[in-house]
Image (cartoon, rainbow, N blue to C red; front, side, top):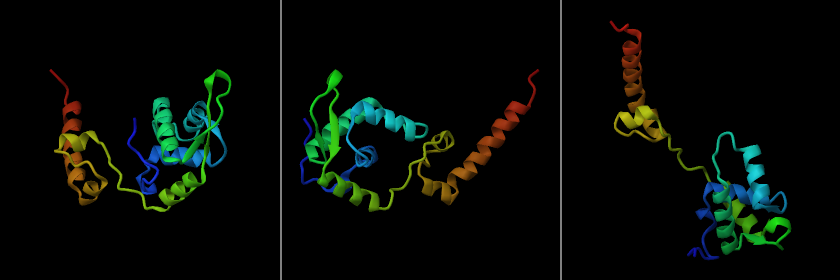
Length: 144
């Protein structure tokens, strides 16, 4: 059972939950409908699984941000955004985005410069150049 309460600040929405609220603002959808919509719109660059969608719908329902409708054919439940959900989404979307976390093999190998700020400071850029030069030399040298 989730410990999320209805007085949870809207800024505590994660990007997946917030995106689902945004989609539900277009109109009521089932979890299956949301999965299809997510895959067609952001699926090429954002991996959201069906289990994540249903988990987020459950949490959003507990928070009062969405309301489950009457179960339809094949046990499909339509969800609709509530006024509290619209308010939470508007609050979330108005916030500046958090820093991105970049997971790069060169950064992991070079000692863990994993944020975009590290890239700007040049730590990873120099290690990447060294790594790239080394791998180029290694692959360009014929074996005897």
